[in-house]
Length: 317
Image (cartoon, rainbow, N blue to C red; front, side):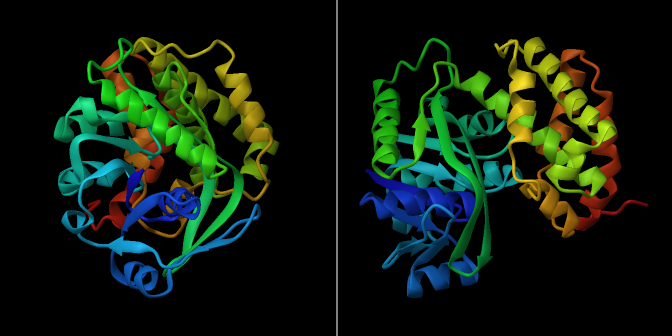
């Protein structure tokens, strides 16, 4: 497959790199020193399950130069999705599918508004990665996992979207990445949302890694309360989450390395713009729209909002 990686950060770089390593035709969209390093020295990935180096690597800052692809893996931050959708238009042909890998549940809708729903898959991934230097990505933990599928229950009238999704699943399988196409990708995305918004929000407020948060009775209770509120919002929006979604998610949290710190929390601790608006902020907003109370998510969101605004250069007084 011809695959474009729009946003070659930790997530896009890892999954795009694995596909390139397996022989897929991958072009990376990057910028600045990261782009220059990839163009000159390739893309290096350190991983506890096997380091690899893509050299040479196709990389450009210009989506038009990349050209039309079969699939775009979207690896930008959640707040950058709408801008990325407009910028990637030269890469989207009649049978191109776009796979968003952002935290949160709103990226497919934002992409569809710009590119058309017929080109957009729902998607999620589970992995802990970060860019540690120009052209250098580190996979820090979690078994790499990716899931995607058509958003609409009735499936798209465009036959190509299902065909491209299956080709992509097969490509990931050849690359040694566990990939699934769940029957209900919407429910799968919301189940990940239970997890990521809880550990990111509570961890950021507590300024503590996952091991400490899950150990203490009070902060562990906050994790569960965040999940319960998200679950209630999901049901109000017609999402068919399984009845055991919360205990299974807490079991997953209990299996994480004790020192784990999710990306939103790292950004907040480092004073950078974060995905707060698309995680706990989104829960509050969707709860208000659906008439569902979300007091714990509101506490987290409003506690972190002043710092988020400072990171974005906005005035608080």
